[in-house]
Length: 497
Ligand code: GLA
Picture 1: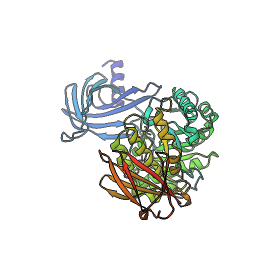
Picture 2 (picture 1 turned 180 degrees about the vertical axis):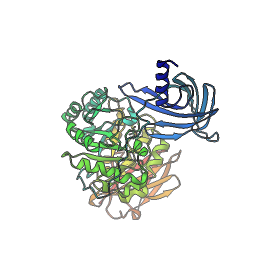
Picture 3 (picture 1 turned 30 degrees about the vertical axis):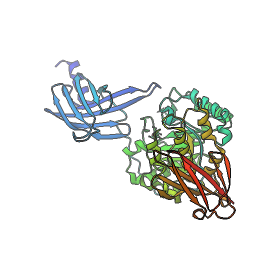
Picture 4 (picture 1 turned 60 degrees about the vertical axis):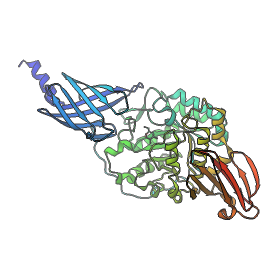
């Protein structure tokens, strides 16, 4: 063997395995079009025709099954053949590159190429032990549920500085700001790597975060940002792991007013049972940077977060997985929140996820149901649509002052289900001054009618009814009050003395 061939062989061995087998770490780097890459690592071990290994993404590491190799072609799968959601990988190796075809049920095949290492997302940093628990003092913020906008539901990774500025403009000019919407929140995909001092940097979609924050503030609005307690965020971007204090300081320097802190990649470092301590870490960090920053926990309602979210300094905590812009998703989440009612209070709210109103997947009646439910639930009202191009009806739904007042009521109590007759559900929420909000929902495919009795709502004798979507006073609440509600619609009433 000549000297060069020897060096090549040693190099190949040292980064994974002998160059003539599949054994090794194969790294695929797909550009995100913002100067960052998304890495997937295929860890393969070949023994004859048997192939074992794992697929590593920034947020997960999963062993694969049914691996087989035949010369330079091979295949493996994400799950056993009996699993209907199994993903099949078929590949061919040419030297130090593998070409993969990925087949998912119900989707077009995807192709990917991967080279022998090195990789970064595949290698985890040293684990820092979670701190001992202690209560983080209340930051005094969010006495009513936060209101604003978040980029994820509509824009996902396609969000940048110019769009955020235009959203802030639209929030101010559309009447949203006047109605109480304040926070302009940038979700995942703004991040880039850290500099030599460990300071987080922004990718090319966000050239200057401080300048962007100044711009949003100049509109009389506030700005929010997103990170993860893990090494990587859900979209595979740089997380805050090991840099919690650095990042809290950087956010404060930029002028950030709100942080959504999303578990995802932390799942590769910590068990679910360690979440509370990990969230406490950032809660502590935010307390020390001398700037009021709303702290939003996002871990999909695991570990009964409503029982400890306030103790780690959280102002709100997600109670569910991600919402989608359709009736089933919205109602599964919204009508599923009843039992969490007792955990909401001023400064600390359950978060059934951001609004989908105006994104196009539901009818206006369904969006009114969405808005009414979220208001009764004292949920954060974070619009998730494109504020630059709203229909007049979307603006009306999002800015209905009477409905917003239900959400923002100073008692901060969360509404509960009080009756369910088939597809008709009645929810009530106690309001300050002895008033009550009543939502009568029709989850069925046809119109429904029902009769409310004043005695069921402690509203006999001189109580008055206002219909908040009709924006009309309905006079005195007599013995009974009859309502008819269109399919998937709602009657939202305020009853007061
Ligand atoms: C998770 C969150 C979403 C959004 C994305 C971003 O799925 O639940 O709300 O923040 O991550 O990657």
